[in-house]
Every structure is written in C-alpha cells, then in structure tokens.
Length: 127
Image (tube, rainbow, N blue to C red; front, side):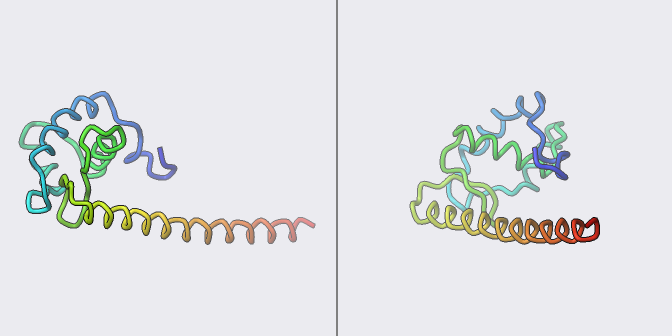
C-alpha cells in the first residue's frame, strides 16, 4: 500500500480477487494494439455486468495479473491494455517503465533534499 494513496493501492479485496479470472480471460483475446481495451471501457463493461470497480482498482487488478504472470505480455499504452509478443513493443514498454521510474526517483530525491533542509533549519532554531 502506498501512503497517501491507500484508497487506491490497498491489497485486492476478496471481491476483486474473484474478478481476476474474468479480467484474465477477457485479456486473452486482446492481442495487438488494434484490439486494446482501455480502463474506461473495462469499467463500463464491468458496470454493465453488475460489478462496481473503479479505474484505479482496475489498474490494481491488472497490476496483480501482470505481477503473478497470469497473462504474459500484457502491456498498457495510450491505446489501452493488450497482449503483445512483438519484441520491439516489449522493449519500448520496458524503456517507458524505466523512464517513469527515473522521473519518480528525481522527484523523491528532490523531496529528500528539501526534508534535509527543513531538519537543518529546525535544528538551527533549537540550538
């Protein structure tokens, strides 16, 4: 669970876990970006089927499916979610993930530096 985002990042509920097979099976025919499906479409289809699952929780379920390897090659892009076996698409996706990791790391390091300055300032006023 991620602090300040608990509502969206908490572990999957039993109800959400019960939806994993439905999600996994629906992704199996989403081969190639021309067959991609967006979170919004998934959410609408889930509502139509009587399930209430929000966009952030859909992403959490997809993350779970990827992390335990239920659906290999499942990537997300501006097209939506789809399966690929195209090595170039996989390499590009990995590069995208690495870029996002780097961007988050830069923000974290900036906040750590700011926190250090605040602590120094606090110690100076105490001393």
